Picture 1 (spheres, rainbow, N blue to C red):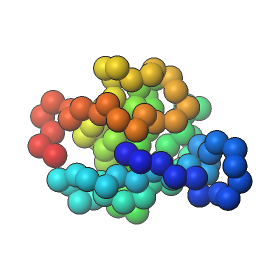
Picture 2 (tube, rainbow, N blue to C red):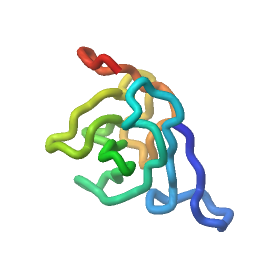
Picture 3 (cartoon, rainbow, N blue to C red):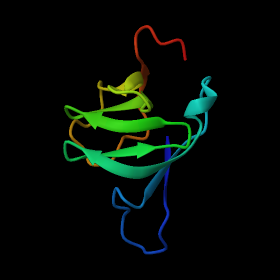
Amino acid sequence: LSASDSSSSPPPPSPSSAVYSVCSSSNPDLLGRYSHTHYVDSAPVWTNDEGMGIWRHFGYWYVGDYSEWPPVTYYRCVVGCEQGGDEPPLKGYKTKKGYEG
């Protein structure tokens, strides 16, 4: 993941202004820009144009298919990642067991 601030102001980005990009994946639907779209249980959710998402659940961050409910996890950041952060970590994601991505 990489992040950029879509506003021109100098303060750190808030969840509503942060834009995340996935630049490398064997799944082409995961590639591209993720914009903040909404909150679920007070946690921000970012989605891309393909329905993929970055979201926090019980304090941990996940990446996967957000077009289904519940979302389908492809990658998760649970070991060595800050639990409960307001912004998703930029590294530390591991492939979910059983996902061939």
